[in-house]
Amino acid sequence: MEAKYIFVTGGVVSSLGKGIISASIGKLLQARGYRITIQKFDPYINVDPGTLNPNEHGECYVTADGCETDLDLGHYERFTDIQTTCANNVTTGKIYQRVIAKERNGDYLGRTVQVVPHITDEIKQRMLALGETGDYDFVVTEIGGTVGDIESLPFLESIRQLKWELGRSAICVHLTYVPYIAAAGELKSKPTQHSVKELQGLGLQPDVLVLRAEHELKRSLLDKVAGFCNVDKDCVIQSIDLPSIYEVPLRMAAQQLDQVILKKFGMEVTGEVNLTAWHRFLERRAKAERIVHVALVGKYDLQDAYKSILECLSQAGTYNDCIVKTHFVRSEGLTPETVTAQLACMDGVIICPGFGSRGIEGKIIAAEYCRTTDKPTLGICLGMQMMVVEYARNVLGYKDANSSETDPQTPHPVIALMEEQKSVTQMGGTMRLGASACRLALHSKAHIAYGRQYIMERHRHRYEFNNAFRPAFEKAGMTCSGINPDNELVEIVEVPACRWYVGVQFHPEYTGTVLHPNPLFVSFVGYMV
Ligand code: GLN
View 1 (cartoon, rainbow, N blue to C red):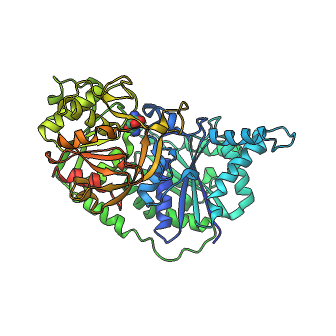
View 2: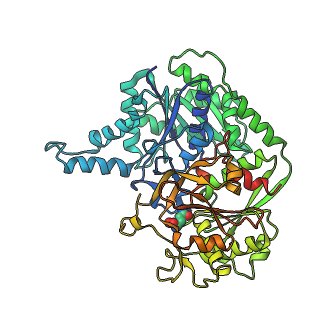
View 3: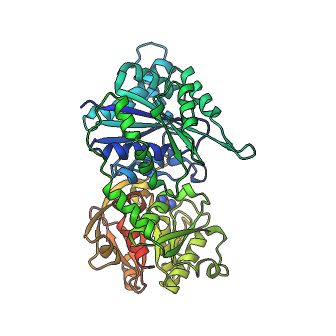
């Protein structure tokens, strides 16, 4: 079957959960046996989100093939177990970079290069690219931003053209918001009507509308919206707030969103949606009662900044039959005087990834506290590096030990720049990125967690454990339990004298999915229950 294209746009306000709806659509079609992929087109001019501040834009997600991408790709993978690639996230920056390179190369032969058709042609080509591989029956394309933004216009124009060219092989799902006016006790559909008008003004007619609301919407309101917006009544679906994002696919299935989509493509609806494993996960989740408390020691006080870590903890909770409650602890504010008050009541601690020097002394203080009080601790990337620095200072006795990221002059650079990184001056996309192999030491905590000796995990960093110090660490009780078999770089450190004190140079949070949780997180939470 030729690939069919589902475009997902959003109106009224941002943060409506377009990523979750896109992931849910992908999930439901996949559960009907179709081969799917999901991609995201972001209207900002950054070439990728790698250079964006997590406090503004949330976490940067990394694909197995080493691209820094939007956090929504994390939802796509967690919901569907697909493996996204560089091709699954396109930004305005990437589009312009390519068009300008072609212009400099003389590819346009004296013509004036314009938004229409040159930018839109480049966008269209990328929108179709994954579908043309023959690997997918459906390509879901989420468009970042909100209809009405200046930046979104070339993307919406591209969808308009594609819908015209592809005929019944392309549909548009538009997500809007229905606010509740408490003083009047009323739910208002007007913003939805305006948002659809805006789309129609651009020549785009949505085929399906998903209305986000905090309160249940009456059938009469959904029908009214259908009438005003030229959309079939059964194509107006509601998406109300749910206790967990993992319930969204079920709520969508209950309203037959998948069937509505298939019918719009003129396809016959046959067979059933198989969500057995998903149901089983949610049932187990609902039964969990016991609560464990995990501190996230980090720099960014924004839920989205540690999105994948939070999701992995939540999944690990379910697989351990407990509920993980997370508590953000600002590393900058941690001192030897305050650390006990902040961490003593926790069942476990995650020392978070990050960049730069701000807050790292707090991470070192947290590492020392956790190690000496034997609290289950997982250090991720910069978190692992600070575990190493702490061990060097307080156990090996190198009082001036540091990462050369923070102190380039330190006589004990236990974390240092890799040789090939030393000449790098450009910031974007120049780190060690993507999946690489790791060999685990037999009977280590990591080996027990993963249950096998070779694993693949994703990276995003410049600095590494300095192998010159490895014998000293091993002798003093910090073992290097994960090693990259290709270059002998240290990937995991552990202190076997502790119950569970593990630091990983990679980011395990990028590979945990609902049906295949990351083993390290499952093991970590398992030590708390
Ligand atoms: N800043 C550290 C490095 O570049 C850690 C990066 C991270 O935590 N992702 O090596």
